[in-house]
Length: 348
Image (cartoon, rainbow, N blue to C red; front, side):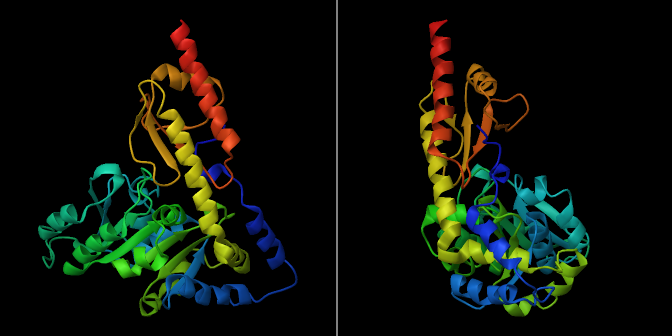
């Protein structure tokens, strides 16, 4: 019963088959192979405009290099306090930007609001040489609490960014899960809503190790080739990263994987929410379940072999994450164990 993270799942068969095909024969190196070159057109069709796409191997690289492209060393990047770039990147955004600051905001379900952002920027000291200068905003789709930004929410944040002349970055580690929930087009939730640059995640949703940095204005990506090389993410055998992304988009594999993971999360949350004293902390909109359970129930689930994260050490808020490979039977095992724990306590 493995629900610690979608990172614990393996790569899906279609991705592994694509890697095996890419391994046949020889191919030009450093992204000059046919698969890598074809990604530009494939992503451009997906987003309904010409884009510039750069495969990298990790989400940390995608986020940090994307922010380095839009924030100078004296800049400020505004993000939620629970964002991945704040809590889980080991200072990589600050390193790759050459020293840009992260300014943190709060908001329910780990989401920023346009109104809060606008108020914060009004007193940020833009143009004052003694202050670090506002440069960018980063939002996470889906958020670190599994909540999804609607297109109107992104558009409102985008309007604030334009008002204050900031770039807007979207950390899309679970972009597929968000899209599967929203049912809108990738264009609608990104560049049409004001997003300038996207970290397009694939690893959490079935890839082996592949992410992409997507620029919605290719003219702004001219020096990104050098940033990627300097960071060690220009792979000599780039075709193996590109093959994963190519297969990920083929026949909407990414959306099918994400929709399945989301459905398993809903099944899990609906069952757990029926337990006495259970309380969902965040609406389940992607593939993460944040729920408060009674401590004896948590301990019984741990004893039964369920793997999950306590969101705070010693607390009763737990996080469970489903993946493309999670089965209904696995979810039902968790629910059965939880039901047995509650029944056992009632009989005492």
